[in-house]
Length: 319
Image (cartoon, rainbow, N blue to C red; front, top):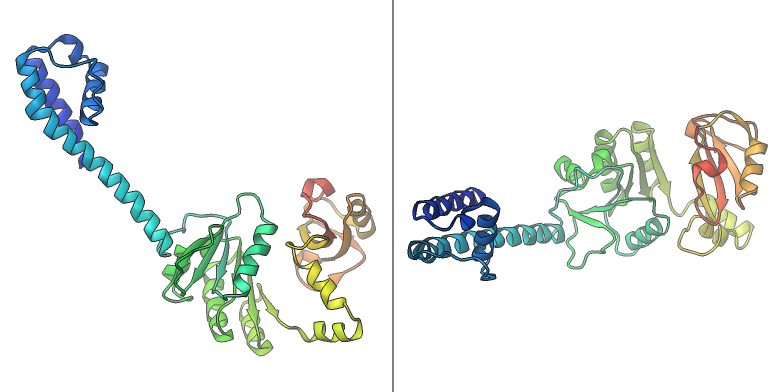
């Protein structure tokens, strides 16, 4: 509406200048737009001005009050729009449904969630977007993430607003196992192609979710196996913790999908060793049991330890 008023006012002013016989130079379209803009913005360079008495009266009673008012309204509206978007983003009311290939963190733990953000940012992928969906309110939001405040972690509208439907990865870490279970079921129904990981304290609840959603990864902590390993082999728990952390200096466990032709496990191991990486295992089709010998075929996912994530073309993983 403001734009229409501005264009309409410019046309009226030009017609008035034409009818009163104002100089032709001021009526030329490029010159007129320049003069009108400098007048409306109150810059007023003074290099152009009406020469006739009628033109000056039009300038005083039509251009000044109309153009300045409309121009001020446009500036005010633009600033208000930007301020409203920033305010909504700070309050967690922004809409990120158009964001693609994001990593969405669902739920918030005051201690563990910041550590997750540190780990994800330490191993950040190109153009990776981090979105945090939580029912908690924040005054100071981590600038590395986009914040979405939800009424419920199972609300479809809030999940869509956080970009869950098109997210590549979703991490669910709610306040309780029941909340995690409910959120996992809702998200698995909304996102069928992304990789969903849930954190549970109770193995029975984790098994309940994976029985209904086989594509969901359920992580239990602390795992009994890790506790026993720490007892049997002192220091093993520290080594395992170091291998899964990207923030600490040293080697980290990574994975990669194999897209090229079939390759013996030993040959792939040699390729990785040439790049200061150690092949650990692979899974056929990215699922099932881990294998430590045989042939790696297209669609398999292999796991390796290295100082940093390798690009697929460096090891010939891409077809």
